[in-house]
Length: 125
Image (cartoon, rainbow, N blue to C red; front, side, top):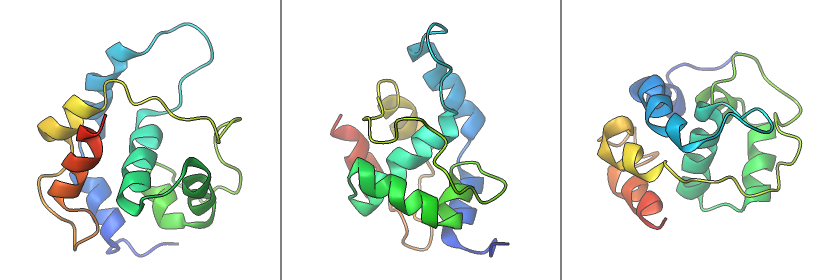
């Protein structure tokens, strides 16, 4: 059970995940292995850049943190990471435009992520 007043719970409600998925979906193919959920990938990238973590560290924190799991769309606490190769870099093609143009909340959520840091993280790509 988690505290729904936690900043990441509130932030997860402010993001239009369906709109983000609609903006990103055209950048991916239907061929090959099934894609991971957009919310998982976008959420991990946001958390990784907000906390300035390596790929390995973001996976490690995700496994241990129920609030991170909630933010990335999980309804129940997960012990394994939902990907076979968590250390492989996650592609971000197609994420910058939708995040900068409004899918990402335009305000800070109790200081967890400010608009400026989100824009800076995604403008690096």
